[in-house]
Amino acid sequence: MKCPVCESDSPSVFFEMDDVPLFCNILCSTKDYALAVQKGDIKLAFCGDCMHVYNSDFKPELLDYTPEYENSLHFSNKFQDYASSLANTIVEKYNIQNKSVIDVGCGQGDFLKMVCDVGNNKGFGFDPSFRDEKRQDGSISADLEIIKDYYSPKYSNYSADLLCCRHVLEHIFEPGQFMQSIRTALQNRKDAVLFFEVPNVLYTLRDMGIWDLIYEHYSYFNSFSITNLFKCSGFEVLDTYETFAGQFLCIEARLTDNSQSSELMISEDISNYVSLFQKQYAEKKDSFAKQLSEIKENNLKAVLWGAGSKGVTFLNTFKIKDEIQYIVDINPRKQGMFVAGTGQKIISPDFLREFKPDVIFIMNAIYRNEIQKMMDEFQIDVKFLTV
Image (cartoon, rainbow, N blue to C red; front, side, top):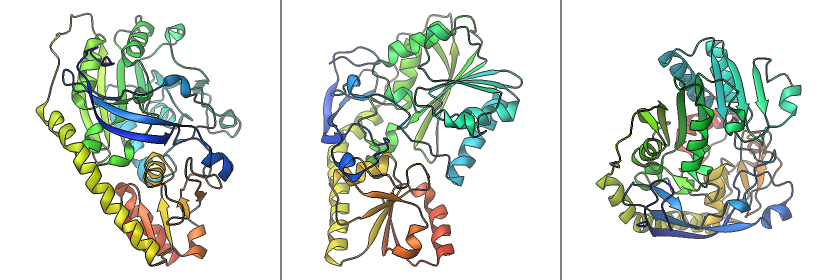
């Protein structure tokens, strides 16, 4: 079991989850389909040599990203503000004006469009899950070209002053090879800036954001392991930093011809978080199991807010059925669909006007004010439980 970052033989498994849906972000059109989704196991391994965490039981051949995959967060004003601020910061910091931008794993092109609009740039997005109707509804402008394919050296003819890759690297089975393919594709643009964003594993280990553990993610990066990956792949790391209340990790880099130091960055803190995780995970899980039991015993009506990875993981962890009947999401593509593994129907916030829940489980505290504002407008007095 070699580490995918430094190829060390030292990684050891420190945490296991069995029988989790392969996809949290796939749209299930019926409850029966949702209940019958294929599942897999997570065995988190930690490499003490480069600080990397990954699922040692990951099987990439089981995953196929199609237009049925939906993980956009851009329907939230809170997230829109964050993404817009991020786009502005990158454009200003590296003077990406009237230039060419590539977005690897662009989804539906939302962030790429922001970067292009801010800097009057030409954008090229790559993503096999892109939906063609986005071209037809006018949301993709003439300045954006979306290729429904994975980015690779065969697209080296596409010029880039900035290459973005957000929430993709954690899905890649061989991250070292992936970075080498990007290096090869950018050989003719060695001055290009790279901007990557991934989930921050410290939010899971340190802050107990345990609902971010999903099968879709092979790698769980921290600032040390992602820096080590980039250095080993021949990139000069310009900056790393946490964003979105510590939930995301960003890294900025560029190609370098200079020989990189073979010395890997390590952290005793990461090791300590890993060693404590199993115990702290069990304590947090037990705490919410008690709250779910109280809801059932008192016949309270409860819903969960957020049909993304966190919400799907929470429901599947407890195999919830009757305690929570519905899951709320503001993404209209998800509404009317069903949660993979447990089968709850995904509803719009408007449904709550009639349903009038007693309890709302909020899967991400960063959206609390946004949710509170909606409930105040609906004149719904409800108890919030931030998960």
